[in-house]
Image (tube, rainbow, N blue to C red; front, side, top):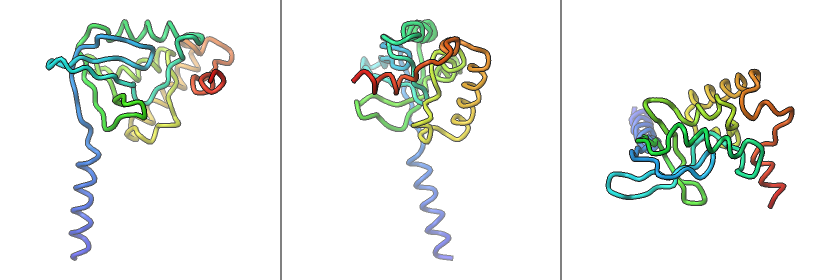
Length: 162
């Protein structure tokens, strides 16, 4: 009995620590197809790396189109960012939501980003599966970067251009 109580307490603590934090603000900058800057009402700026996706680099094929796509969706608009942690560069890794639309997922749907499977474990199971399925659909419809016969993933492009 005592073990069950301890286990239940640990589960509650674990679920609380995994709960995402939220920030809201206006998008004041779009760096590329997966990075934005959000300004909160208290004038605090946060650099946000969109979780679950990797967009082409600006100098890569579709890099500018990906940035334009993200800009059209969120620039100068109020967004909500759901997050749990920061990346090694100090950027918040988060799911960006505009008008209840998952902006990260939209970038994949439009063929403007890959589902970043290398870091998919940071996503909820539901998001991980949904993002993967949406990428398959974008590929089959030759949306955006999938028009190219063999698009180069940004993680490979970065490695080759170090």
